[in-house]
Length: 311
Image 1 (cartoon, helix red, strand yellow):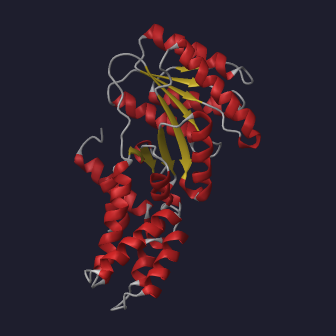
Image 2 (cartoon, rainbow, N blue to C red):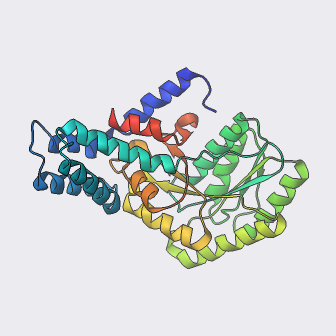
Image 3 (cartoon, rainbow, N blue to C red):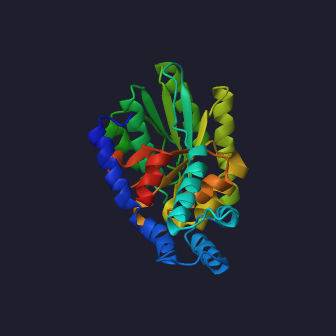
């Protein structure tokens, strides 16, 4: 999936660099709290909890982590700041590991992916990169431009289709998105395509209309090809912090989300939001993105992520 070890190594270095702002806001702040032979007492725990919440990991994770540290402290096993750091690292990895689930699709038959998310999260670019990854794994792929409200969205998807060398099903701007999806499902089945990835609209200023429209697209897919969509992939922008949590809640409650993609981790100090998302939602994290290059979107690897964050 990753190619050779050199490519994987270079991605790890880019991931470390991309997470540097998050590391500054989370890990280095912890180090400053624990600086020197600091006494491990209530003041220290309160300071750490406040710092964790500020780093966007979420109050639930922060509270549970501090509670665990307090229990260990009572057993007198918490005798150095290094132990605190290890507890934090182990807890972050434990939570993220539970949500680590790469998107594996069968070689035979049609697998449909409905990609959702608000405008500006990098949704269409993410679709192009995932399509490229699927193709690299030996799958035949087709894209569908069901965001018919923005001419730019249709054009952008066409550019990605040409770049990756895969067909794009589209209609004119303003067409019914469900009609595009109908055409795409029929075409994918007729051509024996392995993976159909559908781009959808993300205009948040009309939330109710948007969600009703997405529900309709989902219904049409299920009607034309029972069991589809097989994956509803939500693309979230890590730089938005708390807004990413709100969006996950809104989309999951409205249409049901089966996988998350977290983009723009390279440009934010709010990367701790991935911990909060993993803690608060029982939804697999499929991919993370750390830049604009084709291979800057990768299947989520919790151990690699924690190593890059904590080293």
